[in-house]
Image (cartoon, one colour):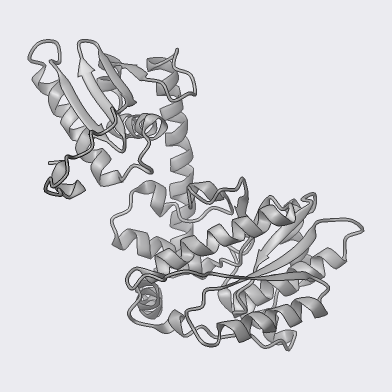
Length: 361
């Protein structure tokens, strides 16, 4: 049986947040977030001065029980001396991809609540089990190393939801803690918690992955091993990121941080290790483009085309022009240039609509 989290352990988990003026706690009413609320309240009570805690419950309006669960969280927060707000996700809900859309909406609403409360940090109850599920989920979708590094303890929210509209950090203090220990903590405190049936709904990928995890664990691929994999990949990610920065400084020393053109020495770019060159290209496209995050598959296709242009070298590279994510990439003579793509011309009335996928062919 799992052991509850002690007050001393909780103090260690939250220690780096003690100087924050305010913390938004994302509390849905499930066992993990209920444990977050209880442990954060206990920790704050031991401090002479510290952050104001604001528990925020997002009512997605997708289940009939959601309003009642939010009210239960409000009552619990009151008994613990923690301020509480319920924020409702209003408007039309999609019929497909609901979990991804609801997740993004949740983070936007939490960011808005944080801004109104003067908080720069949103604390969530993601666990070791969630980390393992995330890695499996991304692995199944062919994620690159950045994705397989899993979730970090602290992440700028704009990296997850670019249009969140707030400068806040997402903090996950329980990433190394098994879910069973959070459940044990709430049960030891004799506090009831909600059960979200969507967590067991086989229509969604994560519940299906959750179901096969015990089988994977019998082969040694348990949550601890998956989290270890994530930590090792994160370490490699940090080294690669530094290598990309060094390459950028060497090949493009005069390019500033604005959205102007980025010019790279072509021969130097061609000599880079493939992964470093790919990431440098992605960083440049992401900086000057204006169409959102760069998809890895499309970036790889662009990089392969550039490599092919290098191999042909018809007349000192010839003329190469491609667009991606709102950026125009050209290879001419001795220089690889990444700049903002020209605005697309509007179509005349009655013109046949062409899908973005076909337009890129």
